[in-house]
Length: 123
Image 1: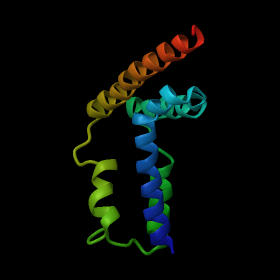
Image 2 (image 1 turned 45 degrees about the vertical axis):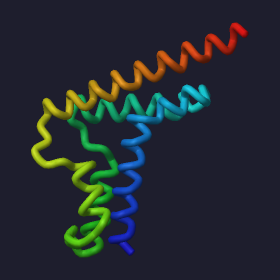
Image 3 (image 1 turned 180 degrees about the vertical axis):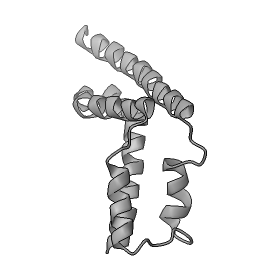
């Protein structure tokens, strides 16, 4: 059960990362999504820029320990998703660049969303 919870936490972590990076696209279609996406994007960028640890990481590690420190080998989640979330040789500089990229992507997407929202209001 704990191994399942650890894998579910990894999946949740990946979905959160995807939401941080791409969730602004929902804002273009549904402006109210900004109430959920903007705090997530700010958190995601801050975690990368300041080198903080996302709370999902210790939670996953906790479940792994409770599962007896299960090995990642042979597991789809561990083999394909873990390297995306926890790449090898991730430096502080790379993390800061990733955080900046999150900000840049979202500034562009929000600019598009605001422009679209304004054009709808003027019709």
